Length: 175
Image (cartoon, rainbow, N blue to C red):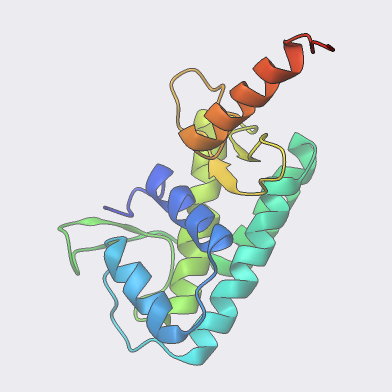
């Protein structure tokens, strides 16, 4: 996964972290590497703490009920996390960073998720982050579909909800 240009990959990674929070700095490091993020420094417990705080702030963006509130929350994240854009070629060729060089992972994820969420919302639509519509499921998803109609976190949840709706329409027979 190429986490630049701060788009769909970043919000999908943020959703994954929100849905399954890492339990240790080691787990966070492993999940970042699996996502394709180049780790420039050792991952410390403080990085896990900051990442969990970033995800909590990001979840508030997901759960915001109107566009203005969502924008204000993202703007707060951007103000706290982003530095001026800069070109770098540290890993995958030349690309932009919206953060200072050699920051600890918690700060890097704060910048990636803040800028990535802002770009996702302005390029795809302010309603393109949400929670699964299936009863009993609270999973977060980022809608990257062409039709902008995603309502479920996964196909299994969509199928279960369709079966539930179908069964609710069937008349019950009393003998």
